[in-house]
Length: 115
Image 1 (cartoon, helix red, strand yellow):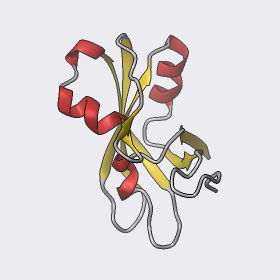
Image 2 (tube, rainbow, N blue to C red):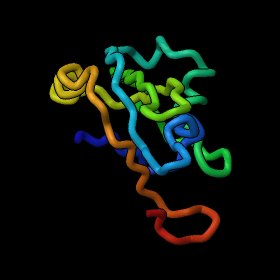
Image 3 (tube, rainbow, N blue to C red):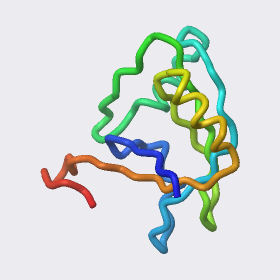
Image 4 (cartoon, rainbow, N blue to C red):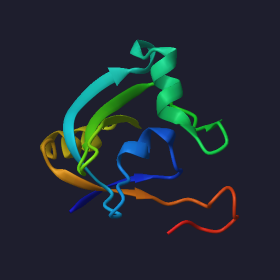
């Protein structure tokens, strides 16, 4: 199974985590976009994590990925990634596939690496 990795626990990921521990999502759509096409609200949604910290989004060509949580709650979430031709092809070919959602970060409350 393919993985989509996040370096922090983003608020947008709340719909992915189910009570049984599944952390999976189906990739619904892949779009190439320009930074200047994004609204301020979408940028804030995409980059906010932890104690209202934010990840710097590159102001260049980007890939917008639209996922649907693959659990009983469901729910859409998006993530924006830096564009490269290889990444774009990889994600385009993976449309419709289920991804494991992986968050690899230090827990900002305990100071320990999350599992």
